[in-house]
Length: 335
Ligand code: GAL
Image (cartoon, rainbow, N blue to C red):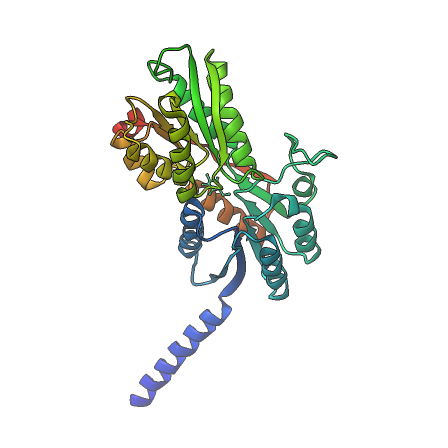
């Protein structure tokens, strides 16, 4: 009887081993342009969380998450390491979209599928200007895709939230909206489009605009605060709207606005993008006019889902788009 029990136990253990030995582990290399970026931190954490939820007894994911440190040379090394380590798929948030060609070529030559996220490479003309066109490096490769949100939509939503105000943003009633613009990384299409389309939405609503100041804050909260404080110092009450290309900079601007003794909703308006938790709270409290949800959950899940399809050898599209959502007081109150 005892012998039988021991035999049964050994058999069960052997079976367990056989099952776990048959589990397939996929190696996933992820490189993020910069770990300290607020929005990309939410995004990369959700990539890891979501991969975990997709694991089964038979399928496991081994994720290597690398910090590009906002340095293209560093990121290029990481990609070379991913290739040497034989990653089964790479998810990449480029430091510089102008390096997209070189990177795509390397990864494709190594036979590794590639999912680009967040920083959309666009076609360039011969003078290096970005063209409003899909990128051939993506279109021409069956195992390469881009997952993102169309930044034109986020800019438009920002402008529309301004135009939808009772006074359309014209606080002093002089017939025009005087604004300052705080931009993200200027090489980044999100920064370019948000800057252009927020103002375009105001103009499209028949509003006259005046740009008092346009500065680069590189997506950074401290920089956003500094630039907004400077502009308020120089232009004072003339500043009616502060547009920030993202919420990190808007959070900084909110601090500068308070410090300058100004009151959002009364003598100034403030608009951001991302819908970071802290920014949504400020919208609730009336300390920000609005933000735009940059759906890191939708985007990270779409990126992981397509990575899994690639691992399974399934066909994919070259582009996947996730919508933005306007987040103003009416929206947060209704939640
Ligand atoms: C944008 C986001 C910014 C910053 C940037 C990085 O989509 O709004 O906050 O994360 O991506 O490329």
